[in-house]
Length: 245
Image (cartoon, rainbow, N blue to C red; front, top):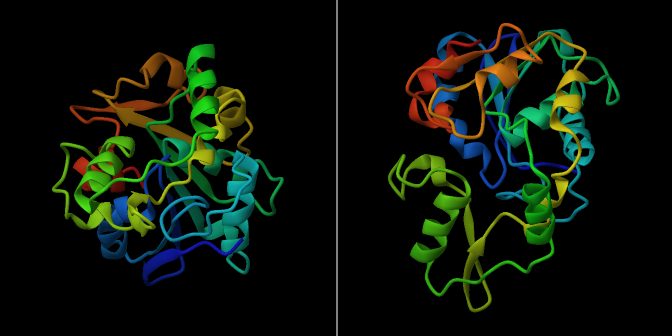
């Protein structure tokens, strides 16, 4: 599946920026500018079912990983770093399993939720079966998008990071994210993360309620928290996340 993708920078090194559930590649704008300043290239796709990428499923982690592998065909994977936020970090780990081609040089993750209760999994699966809501106005849809993507209260509604989150539909406006993407939730995230066969570095904001340091360190002993930052650390402090590179 051909993903809609932003890209920029110059150089041999490439950083692949993988967004979280409900967001789009636009959330990486701040990090991308700093990657360019380091003399590297970057690409930031909208994952399938998000933004301007094709909306058709299936939406399992393996499907997303295969899409990104297709996007990277022809790249020297020894010069590729994957940087994934939350859901995108899990996609990166599956891609780094070796099942989709050559291994990347490195996988960095920020804010990956490792522990899922049975109730949370059931809720995500139920959400995947519901039709998307249609909002009367674009502003209402944008507000909902900001909440779903975790951007609410972090940036202005018209900030570049909110791009492609909603679109016009018959009768109003809807989230660009397809409800079915929530159906990916279910497989053991720790097991998927441990399946990465390239060097793995994990981090999360210290104020991220979805992640705790001890659980991360059970997978990456050198995992660390980023002081004072929330789940969307890459949006609030792109310079801190870029420094992980």
